[in-house]
Length: 472
Image (cartoon, rainbow, N blue to C red):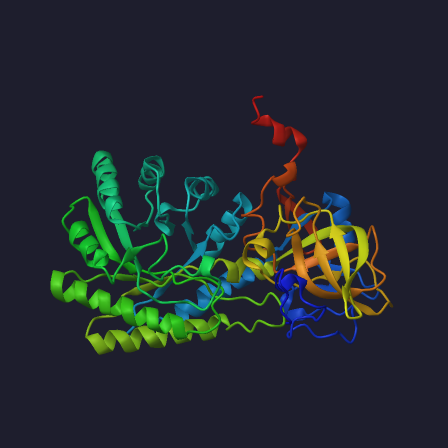
């Protein structure tokens, strides 16, 4: 893309290289949409056996729509592929922890209970949802770089299967609370192992200069091992690393496995402690646009299994049981967001180029990722078929920010107008989780669709909700 002194978003009118002019602007790019999604003869998007026009009529817009069959199918496929890949000796099995931060509600938590997944949580609120939904405590892992005493206490009372130790001071914190409660806390050490995942700097989480984890390079990792083993209130399960998000190949994981297995071997040889588990984190990439080419769950699982077997054999230790933490890879493709179009206008970019701006009734309060990470999304006209030619467009929100952009670049029908429905795919992860009341916006509902039925998981916020906590 051509450069511009005010930034890439203002570059002269060319679409990014991955965005091709469509032969038919009504077509769906099927890999980006939930498994049940298609357009009928009138161009109306169907998902979960329902036309989106009916969904919008029932719950309004904007709305997060989750294809239940897609979500649960991805969860069970991920679980099955990792169990199969790690089943045969010398490997010792694998557990899949869904990352609750991607998207969690009571209804979704109950799906996870029923489908046999484990869950990692990063806050007391996420933990409370899992406990209320009936998730057995031993299937929950507690993360966090600055855990409150009350959250650690609640986690131990719930019998969580592991607490991820993120810093040296946290060792005494967890041990003290466990001792007071008369329980032994199972812990893993979250380590920074110097692996630079090729992703946005805000979601690369295992290099040294960031807030997460115990640095192996400066000795904090092994010092943590010594301190944990010295505390009878703690049981060391193993070491863990999460190298980032939106990762599209297994090379970074292979390097992480190499370093984690080496650390596990050092713990065995120098401290006489055989760690039974190894945490490899998540971050498996998904396709938001045609510019993304993610691995399948099978490719990811088999690649990681081969690396674990190789590295454990090389250092002469028995392979630990492995855990992974996918969130986005399960939730994101299962979700779409519905919007209603308001204002549209043409903007001249100079040199004969124009861009169509399409304003919708949501924006950065329901999807901050474009503004925060420069994330790319796709979109489609969802409520009718159009015979108009494609026009390079930008879908924007209604907030008081020039960076309030939902979809930076997409070809949309030139005749799109007020009242049309627009659907944005791959919004099941992090959109609801990171939503806000900016400009006193009301958070959209989360609805599940399956077999022609709609079920509200989280209702739309009301003005009464917004004002309830404001004491004046």
